[in-house]
Amino acid sequence: MKYAYSPATGEIIDTDSPADWMGTTTVTPPLYNKATQGCFWRDNAWAVVDSEAGETVSDPKMTGIEFDGVMCSATSQDQSGLLAVLMAFNMDGASFQPTRFRFSNGNSLVITKDNLLHFMSVWKPFRQSFFAVD
View 1: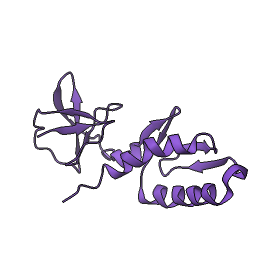
View 2 (view 1 turned 180 degrees about the horizontal axis):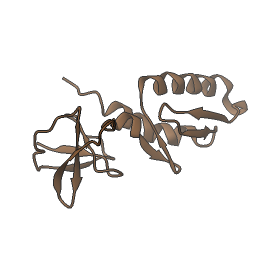
View 3 (view 1 turned 180 degrees about the vertical axis):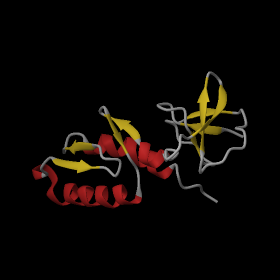
View 4 (view 1 turned 60 degrees about the horizontal axis):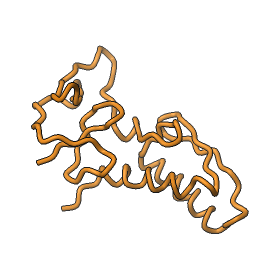
């Protein structure tokens, strides 16, 4: 079995079908408490890290995926907002105006008619990677 992790952070990604952009290993991760610990791929081994008092373990959906130097989160709210931007792009065509999209993780990206399709080719597989096919 392959286990997936974020190439940017090394954090484990809980999925049965890793996307092409994800790092993978056949090394089985150790058991850990997802509420109080994180599991990271470091130096060709899994490392369990305790969160500090009051700190929450990061959610890969909130960490996001990098596009054009911006870490773009992939929450359900992000998906809903991006669908609205995509709908405007489809309706407006060549007259689509640049749109600053604010992601749930606080970062923002200016989406233009020139970068939207490339952005979606990166972001969509990341978002879909959180949903295993039965």
